[in-house]
Length: 147
Length: 153
Image 1 (cartoon, helix red, strand yellow):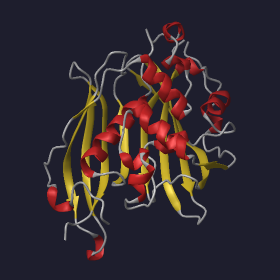
Image 2 (cartoon, one colour):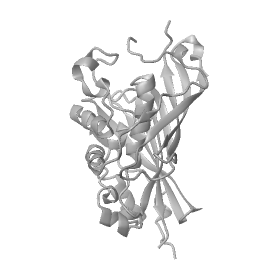
Image 3 (tube, chains in turn blue, cyan):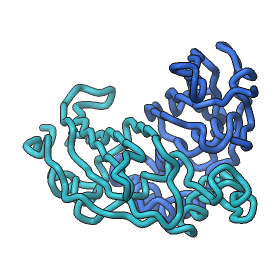
Image 4 (cartoon, helix red, strand yellow):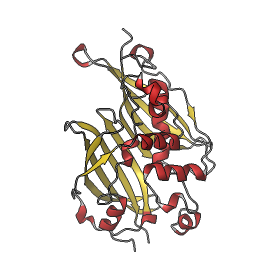
């Protein structure tokens, strides 16, 4: 495979992912994400609906923030490397919030039977501008050897 | 009194449905996230890449919806208003890249329903699993999502 951003030799247990800082959340992005994803829950679009539902104001789709987390991994390790990605939505992301995605390598496994990719296990999280975690999660990425 | 939900749908399997991935939908999805990788957006660059075409971002299978088994159907089955739900957890496992023009078969089931006390009152947790297979009958992706229902009245 010719396309790789980071090879297996480039990461070790403890290697830190470069933080991905996303622009402040705007209503238009939530509307775009609704259209792109098919999730038209009015709680992400309609402040009056969100207030009546007891949520105070609109908030971002969890899946939008998970998309940011996925991007943080693929920006670092390359598109197509993500074998597993799992998250817990820990806190709501509101309009104006700046989400920063962070992570580190917690395990690196050699190819099974000496063939195929290395697998890197990542611990991931995303935080808002106050440093509060909005997502915690983990991923497994497949990395090819430079050789 | 907290509201009651219909927990008898635990184990329910929805009718399998097919989804054909549109090239423009992949690009719209990547742009909505603000992920501008050419492997999602640029046909010419991606053509020279490892897959010979663009592929979909990791969370793209969340768009694989069907009216017969979407969140609206779930809410009707549970007897719950849309304003009560939150996304609690989500997982994806990927086995093959998701490509434009391909048709995938999705099988969705309610894997679990359980209740527990949360910070802001009683909550129900509804776990849905979707298996995505391609025309070779290979598993392409697995999705597991937990929807949280706020039960406080």
